[in-house]
Image (cartoon, rainbow, N blue to C red; front, side):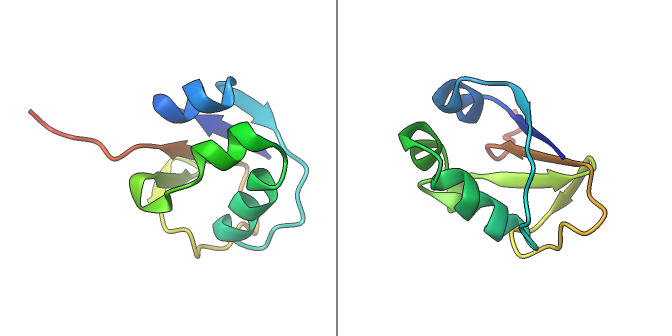
Length: 81
């Protein structure tokens, strides 16, 4: 699946997008796999309350299933002004 990173998440990881092979059942499982990769992922996913996730371009939750999902995007909360 494609995993996309936006804003400071992209800056910490150093990539805007990557293809990930995973056996993760949920977004939380995927985050655990990514955090275990190396310190830059650990830093990016250290505080999940500061992150939002979208599955196939629809806002979702970290306990959501990844079954059939082609794209996961991580980004900070949006603010209006």
